Length: 116
Length: 409
Image (tube, rainbow over all chains, first blue to last red):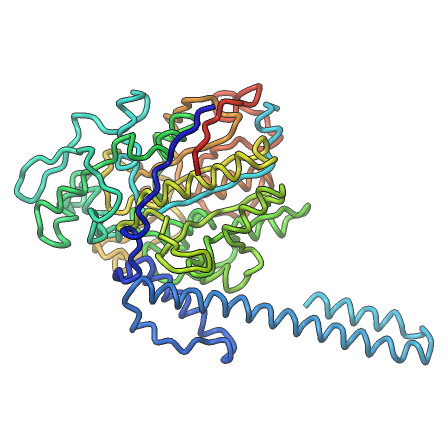
């Protein structure tokens, strides 16, 4: 087996967050801006993307919106879980009091809720 | 079934940014004549009429600034040399002219012909010589990143030749959706470098299926814990930024990002797989999304048209485009311990539609609907369970190699 040396870049020279944003990052920012419009208001960044001129500014925006998209999905999933739990708890109550006569119907409701 | 295919459980694709085959691997012709790279016969005219030959003078950073134009009209000029007549033919004579258009600087325009010497790129050139290098892997479109990357995810760009938001039209599902919705279910993931770099697949997958995504740290963890999905796609770091672990230099190799940082990243992906218990069961494809406006000498071939057409207005050339010609050639290397050292894949044509084509056929078998481009794309790994043609099978060794190289990363 051969061990091959990989030269490291000089990070201080290579790193330049003030570099003007390239076409690819501009497109990525635009795509995230478009995605951001679909987010609930509380997850939006309120950043004016036309003012993003450098790679560092683009990176900051990309981080915020990517995080916001993930948080919005997590919040929606958590809400869904809560609703399912509430439905299940509501079903549990009457069944304990009245027996299992309508149990099959209630189980169907829970199942449907999980599918959503 | 050949043991390499029999053992294969995971396909990993790493897609880098914006470098042509000749620019990165052209030097290897001097080492192995079967590799179709740089020779003395190649040149482009500059705008003074002088002949400019490729030279091994490429630098890691600071040389291709401004970023060479690689949007559709510029690539049209690069491929056709500026001929816009109805019966024109491709000649790869317009690279210097195209770069000149950006600054009108003759000296700067000639740098588009520069390529890296072998010893400058120890990772990429070693992998190319040690495993399977493709002589004819082309970008899917003579255009920029987003539409080319779409071919890797969907087998089509749905008629787009630009960087605009790409909304997926049913019925062509992404390769990830196909896998996770299959019966039996398969696993798939897109690993982006970190949240600050994120993904180029924002409009559809990140918005609608964020559970498909992981970070590069998770990829490393999944490798070490033998938890890799059946198929995964890795995106490099697209921007310079600070993180909790310090300064993160962009490693996508997009001009004018540092090429050595990309070399380190490729070596890191390779090492994570090679030191994983899953190494015998994994194939890694390292490929570039498009050529980034940088010189390559191989004429992109015509191909099966897609079912979409970009309008003359969208292409910016005055002519519509039926997706019936591939983009400029890019580096592509398939890595597995079951591939013989020094494999050169020649006489077959691949593009990024080959990625979903290969993954679909390997894990799912017959699947439809898929785009005409994907349906007609060649596969780089033979389908699982099918009668295997030995002449096409790249994972052809009967015993696993134990002489694969290591990198000190």
